[in-house]
Image 1 (cartoon, rainbow, N blue to C red):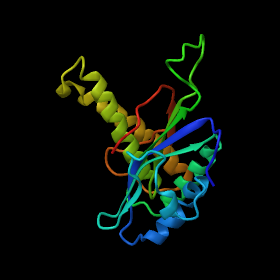
Image 2: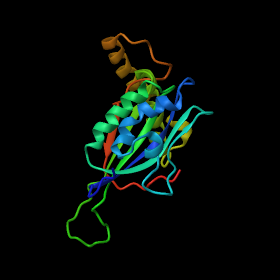
Image 3: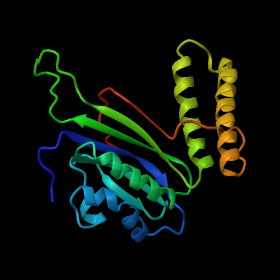
Length: 209
């Protein structure tokens, strides 16, 4: 059933490459925490976003790709739902992938003129993948992209090879520590470790694709 008087509009955005043998019924089970949170009885019922201009939750069977641009009303308990979904997606993901989750304060109005009012907006970046190496790979790639993009305002891209190398070194050190503790295999070349998630504040625009 629909949720009323909820403090947040929660937007989930991302693409997850899936294993070739993954079928719609597997996705139905993996995403059950999401569509149940939305008050739906099935993935087909819960895949529709709260906003008509968002495509919602889609499964591209030909490309073996899960695409999400989906908004639901909810509260902070949605974080537990996200934990469950990420664990489920780890079981069917082909490669590492990032999911952006934005909590929009439904009661906050930037134009209402309330003195001292602060938004409770929050932003969380989550990562899924078939193993820690795959997760760290996508984390590394995103970090390099962000750092290079920021530093190219002041330096030529050709000058930033040393910066990228230092990022790779940090990731490799973290993965080595994880591998030693869990007896995991060696990661791909140029890979290392980063925290498995992140968050920040700031109002972000909804994605429309």
